[in-house]
Image (cartoon, rainbow, N blue to C red):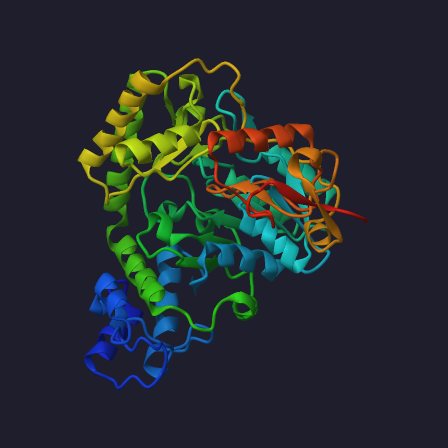
Length: 483
């Protein structure tokens, strides 16, 4: 019998396996939960029984020939791709596999500088050379936007030997570049297009949303299904068009992805794909309705600004993801991270992130109206209790970097440790970033400036969770000691 989108091959194989009561003389050592009662009681016996190792009836993620292969075929069909790879090392692994599949040491890749750390990490690993495009900036909101088509054209003209262009679709804030036009220009110049769609799963299944990578003609797309698609955290798809070699991409994935793929993650992707294909339009219609309602009510409060499609300018904001509830907080005299902390500590509301001037709430069809109302009411309460004069607040999230040497060269160079406040003028040898969103403030090979140091100090003062340095206290930074 042929496969259809009603099937979930990995799920069906696991159900059959559990019914067989197989004697467990293999890993994992918890033996279906019997070896760790506390963990079994916490996660549930059925979950523990499904945490199994690769075996012939369940296929093998590194070289799938049966149920995982069937699940890949259905996922590719659902997403409009030629091939879909199940990824269990997060979308970080998907992004890195994209870059490492098209770039070798010394190859150039064009990308916006407001990429996730995973993209720059890939450059450190494989030795590719970034050609950064500074994104547009909305000065009122202080946020990085998308890439201007004219900037992409200029970068391609100046770097005709570049292998690919990487595009955020969308950014963390919901901003989209003109993906279709970027694809057209890149392909005319024999370059591939890679989409970081960590926050764009819903583009493939919802109506009235920005165009997705595969539909726009991109060659590869990293899709973080766990963020907005309903699978378990750390599960992801890597989608490919026919323009790349499926076998070679799988070889690249297998360089870094675990050989012990979690069947809990795999089955969650399988069932998420089925649910999205069958019910995605309805799911994301409800999601957009919740988000639109929240935006409207927040903007009625005054002070806070929940931005949306009114930002669209046909260029650096070519489109906007209306499922994102991105809220500007600086007019209230509050940094986004302060709003983030107050919502969690005082109102028991956990939002996605807060940075210097904005917060982001992720809503989905899994939310309830009461929870959206609680969020809106909490912001109203905060306006009354916590608002203050915004004078003197840091007014932007993105600082154009000065790239001195490639990331790999800087990361593996001879380095010395300096107090961060005394590092101005040096070349950074590691990362500094607020997480989330995980977009580096400094990346290896970039010049440390007084402006960047002021931003880092301000981020610390406001309570941002800084990561990336060897020094876990983020008091010292490694700089390149000699070229």
